[in-house]
Length: 469
Image (cartoon, rainbow, N blue to C red):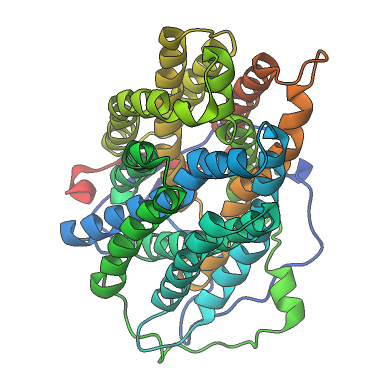
């Protein structure tokens, strides 16, 4: 155990675990030039010695509300609305859902780091992050009529690209604000709150739009309207300093922008191993995310539009498990100062839930599988986000860039899974082999958690009471 004293008032202990040499990670040949504020020190990684001022409760409320809105606007269409609209335009073509989701993920994969890098370098009286939050809001709102009223699959796909680009940009900008301002002593608990909102936002959204399934316009518009209000409040009232006085030592060129999509794993090994573990976990998770409606319809032998009632019931029950996983996991992580045990428990619970779902053919067993998976996802997401902030490199100058690169670990699986899932569904010669799909998801999720636990060497292990006060 290595002791580091950040400011003379609190003590942070760093936990180190044995692992293979980090040289085994693939190394890219270039790294993007570093934008540096005048007089700012160069930092190779986020330092535990740099403790930011604590964020007020009011600011946390705004952050949680904005996260809730962004989650609802982005996940409800993915989990329900797109499926209903696709069933109207191309009945029985579940395979096309994967294609549409994959195209949207590919678009956000390109845009996420671009907006992150640009926001790092943005100089306005409204700060670095706020302009991109507003741009994202506008795109998200525009996507609603395109998805709801588009006459064919092409327009539905275009609308989904606009949706992922818009709400993804807005949510990413809110996340960058969180990375800019949140101190280590609040990361577990606040990440638990935001993780919980990401769990319950689609649940409440599906409950809200379920009775509206006969009006596809409202199915798309209601989540977007809620997001517009909540993220709009964040834009207006969340504090962000004027960034016009901050200047850069290097110009942004096309080459530098392209290189900003990459990083050298050797220089930031904890960040690299955490990225890989998250990638594997989310590869498993995203295999099933877009196919839940078709899964329930097949296993319970019911029409796709009627799944909304069942999904709302199952989702409502999962609020309690999400509360336990997110709030409990995040609070416990900050309290005991340990992230890894909760990460491991989370992925094991998700794996157990997916395994139960794989062999479920009645409502009761489906509920059990969903609830186990829900508490696992919640625990992993809350504490996993805290780990992301713990190992984030270049926090002062390139937080947006590295948060966007972190999002790659979720976005790339979003591109690959819609391609892989239809192939897994056809294993054995059938059209919809959900058993194989869910077992594969379980195995990948557990493997991702094990990578993080075994390979990320430096995470906060214990903090003094003074630091948490």
